[in-house]
Length: 198
Length: 355
Ligand code: HEM
Picture 1 (cartoon, each protein chain N blue to C red):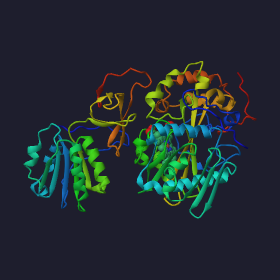
Picture 2 (tube, rainbow over the protein chains, first blue to last red; picture 1 turned 45 degrees about the vertical axis):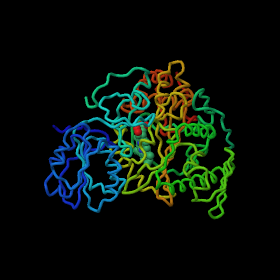
Picture 3 (cartoon, rainbow over the protein chains, first blue to last red; picture 1 turned 60 degrees about the vertical axis):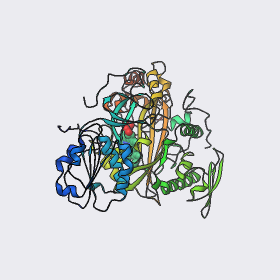
Picture 4 (tube, rainbow over the protein chains, first blue to last red; picture 1 turned 180 degrees about the horizontal axis):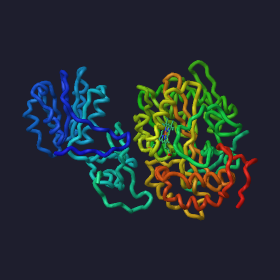
């Protein structure tokens, strides 16, 4: 799958990188959906000997390929929410020098990044690579509810039902972009939804 | 002078009014006939008697009404006041700063009596007389930042300073020009300014940050910022934008003079002693067009500034759709005469309108 080039944006928006295998005694790789492919791209038998992979398929079928890499530990989680306690536990037990690899959707990377910084993992030990869907995790500025996997702009807040437009302003603490009422100045005038990058 | 506090509202029936005194001291933000973002900062060391620069934390006729409005906002949305756990000491610093300044600058309104860590705070306009133990949160009804900023006009952002960067880690934000504390809390200086157009490219935020990091205790700084607000609405928050946004479309040539307000923020910057945090009070002043036009210099100048303002700024500030109507109104007050430099109205020397 070709990598998506995000257009240049404002300074609150994170810039994702490209994974590379690093040396280190232990490695934690957290991926969802197509993020598996970024792991497959850098995996070597030596690296996998000391790697713990946490993978959330989100409907993709890469789990077997990851398992076949024979990482030291492998966990397949049904959703991010179901996996987050495990992620916290692993990070809290991390030794100095742990290398973290986050890859897949922005939602996965943003939320897992928040866990790494809460756990005190140095920024320099965390790598990211976006793969797959360009959907966004959105916070409704009005009701504060989070809507996952937003592909269209505008969209309907899954909590309060307002029609929101998709901003580029991004909060690392919420791991979300901001959604703001699109028809506040002209009630009922909702533009035809388009893909966020169309 | 003694201040007569207005009984007025910033919502619903919008009974907010400026007295002649308040109009005269309104911090008109344009020192020349055009406007562009710049690193417009200067020392905050007083100013002309009676001006909003004179005292460290200006108290005016809107004090009680503004505090009532803040309490209403907080009842509906407690997330407008947040403080990350490491910011409590900065909250005490801020409480001390405001109590000291207000009791020294307005001794007839506020008193602070200190006996070791036992402090007695008297706020006469609000009818408060509390005794508490400094640095002991259990002796106050709210956290220290919330306690004191429920008694001080203007919003307050409290910035932690680490790694040569400022982090917005606490704040009391109920009168904001369309940005969300709940969303921005925890961001750094460049991140929370990300949505501002043109200024990043001009290097303004890099220079501004450098200036702020070097602000020393006892040497505060200030700047003015401005935007436009229809109706004297303090709570122009994004949280409530779906409720107030429609008011922007209710402007007409008949009502623009009293409905359209210039919204000016007197922003100051203070270094706090124990926490080394920086506090950023954002004091909002509202003045409607017709009151502003009583100063011939301001009438001439506002027309020229709005006429020549880049569209990016008018769009960001949210008044691009109403700009033509504003210009129709304001042009009546521009007779082409030159204007004197500086922000003051210069009533005695500026000629009356020649139209
Ligand atoms: C450390 C204290 C400061 C804080 C907490 C602060 C906060 C903010 C916030 C939250 C916004 C709104 C951004 C948005 O659209 O979401 C803003 C806008 C802005 N800030 Fe700051 N700011 C600070 C200092 C400064 C300084 C020193 C400058 C000096 C140049 C500055 C220049 C601006 C400008 C030009 C805008 C756009 C305002 C407009 O056009 O209405 N800020 N600031």
